[in-house]
Length: 315
View 1: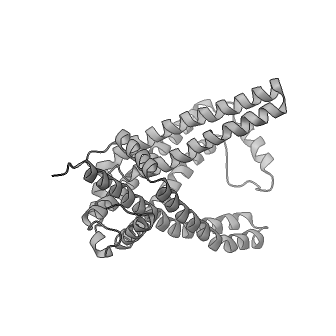
View 2: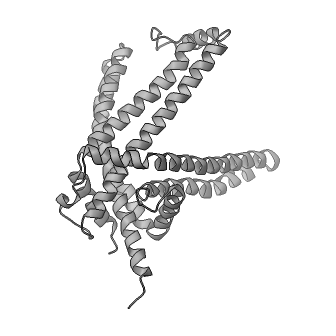
View 3: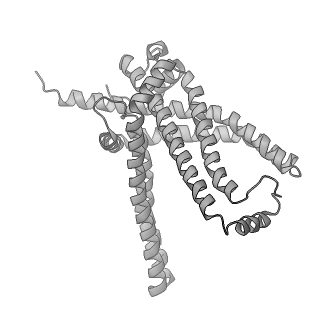
């Protein structure tokens, strides 16, 4: 049965409500990855003499202080950079593990529910810590290598972007501003369309990774196939969740502005309260991430089912 964007949204909503603990797990994921990334950045900074007792109103003094500590710190800085790389790799693995558990639970919850647009959310109930950790452990390397593949694809797109920019500069220098601007504007459309399409296709591909026969390459191909077959549904789903994300941001905007103006003379207190506010804001953001993932799982699985039905020969 072919599912519309609204059908996928409703199935995703039922899946999210039935496995609501995934929202908390996603929040833990965001917090854990954030802590690891901050620690990775802090270690090399600490090796070159960075401390917290600096004046945020005078960043140039901090730069001068750090530059002054650079001579003679080559070995310490190298060790700091190695520790930074190790922590970033660990953060990458933690992210892959949580994503594998998230999509594993959502995929098999959608599979166990009866096919169709709207189903009782109790049919989607799958979550347990054992199931989550099991799917995470089983698919962590599949997701890890998939994200590496996605990084390669985006790097190629980035090279195209740099090449387009370089050609625009050369055209501007040789043939004048009109030619440079024309080449830049004409070239910008396919380059940015490529980035946009790749972002959508890679997001869809994650929903196919827990499938038994899937893998990084197979899931990537399936993601772009679904995007080519159902571009309207994909765009509508992403637009809905994008608008919901803007709504969450607007909801927290008055609190953020209040901290900015109310604690302008106490920068460290403002940063601390902003961090607390950010942790609170991560909860609805996590709910939106789980909801979008569940809707994409419904769409990708629905298209896979339709294709199997089309391939079955008539009796």
